[in-house]
Length: 157
Length: 424
Image 1 (tube, rainbow over the protein chains, first blue to last red):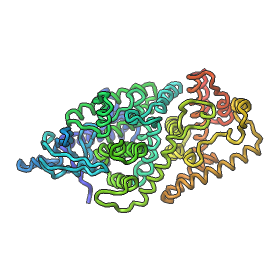
Image 2 (cartoon, chains in turn purple, cyan):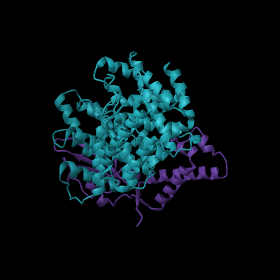
Image 3 (cartoon, rainbow over the protein chains, first blue to last red):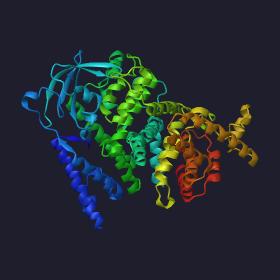
C-alpha cells in the first residue's frame, strides 16, 4: 500500500502551489521558452536549482505528483475528541519541575523541529499520539523524560 | 578563479571554528564544524545507499549544510544558550536538559535562525559564478526546507552524527552530556531506517533498547565504521605537526576541504568527470589514516638530528626513482591493509567500492583520480599559504615544488596563477 502523506490545509496549498509553478516552468522549458518565472525578481528562492537542472525539476514534479496522489488531509477531530492528541494538535507539556515544552504534531512533509513542528513518525511524535490531557508520557530514550500533558489545542487546522 | 579562492579562504574558517555545543559543555579541543561535516557526508553516503537516494545530491547537501556558519556562527537548536545566565550549575542543568520552549517561541527562534543563516550564506557565495551559487543555495534549501528525500535524510543524519559525537565525548552517564542529545534527535528522526539506526546506537552504547531489539547486522557494522572514522576528527595532519603548527587541521578537516574543492572544480563540463565518483573518492582518499595515522613523504627520510631535519623540511623530498617506488609500494601495501581492516565488516559491495575508489586514487588510474590527486596538492598548498599568512616564517616552498611536479591540467594551471596572485 502506498504511503500516505498527512498534510494540513495550509501544507496542501503550499504543495499545490509548488506543483503548479513547477508545471508552468517545465511547460515553458519544453517549448524552448525561457520561463519568465525563473527570471522574475519574485522567484521563490527555493526554486533556484530549477533554472538549469531539468532532471531535478522532473524528479521534483514526479515526487510532488506522487505526494498529491497519496495525500490525506489532517482534519479537525470531532469536538468530544479534541482533548486527545491526533495529527495537527499542539501539545503543551510540563515537567515535574514546572518547565514547559510544546510541540505541534504534523506529517513528515511539514515537520520542522526548529519551528516546533515534529513528525508523527518521530519517536516523540509517536509517543504523544492518542494521549489526553493530564496523561503522563515518558519519552523513552536512554534518559527517561517524564512529561504531563497540560493542554491540547488544534489551532493549525 | 579569484572569487572561488576567496570563497574557499572564508570557508576554511570552518576548520577552526569549534562546535558551540561542545564549547558550552567545556570539551577540550572539540571537533570543528568541518570535522562534523566530514562524518555527516560519509554517513549520508553509506546510509543513503540503503535508501537508494541520489548520493551525489546527498553528499553535496551534507557538504553545504553548514557553510552559512562562516558568518552566522554555529547555532545550537533554538539559540538555547541565550538562556544561560553564567551560573555554572544552572547553565549545566539547561545544557544537559535540552530545550524547553513554547511552540510560539520555537517558531520565532527557528525563523530568526533561518533568516540569519540565509543572509550569511548569500553573503558567502555572493561572488561565485551564478551556476555554482545557485547549486550551493539549492543544496542548502533542500536541507533547511527539507525539499527533497535527500534533504530530509541529511537533516536527520546531521542530528544523529551530533548525537554520536556527544556519546563519544561524554559517554552514557545520565548526569553527563551524552544522553541530553537524545531528546533533540528523537524530535527530528522519523525515517524508518534511521529510527532503526538509533536503536543500533542505543544497543551498542547503552546495552538495552526499550521495546526490544532486533539484530541489524548491516547497520551495526555501519555504526562501527562511523565510530572508527571519528578518529580522523582528532588526527592532526602530520605535515603540519612536524613543522610545529599549533592546532593544525585534522585529517577530517582536510577531507572536507578536498571534497568541497572536488565539487567546485570538478563540475567543469569540459573535464567530463563523474561527480558522484569524484565526491566519494575525495571522502575516501585518506580513510586509511584511521589505522596508519597520517603519513607524509618525509616519514622515511627524516633524521633524528633537529638541524638536519630542518634542512630536509625546507624542500620537497629529493629521492632517487627506485627509492620513490619502494616507498610508494610500502605505503600502498600498509594503507591497503589498513583500509581492508577498516571496511572488513561493511557489506561486500560497499567494501569493494571504497577500496576500489581508494586504489584508483592512489594509482591515479582514472580521470577522476588523476584530477583529484592534483587537487589534493592544491588543498595542502592552500592550507600552507593560509598558515603562512598568520606566520611569515612558515615556508610554502616544498609544497610549491610538489605542485609544480604534479600539475598537468588547465584547472591546475589556473589555480597556480590564482594562488600566486592572491598570496603573492
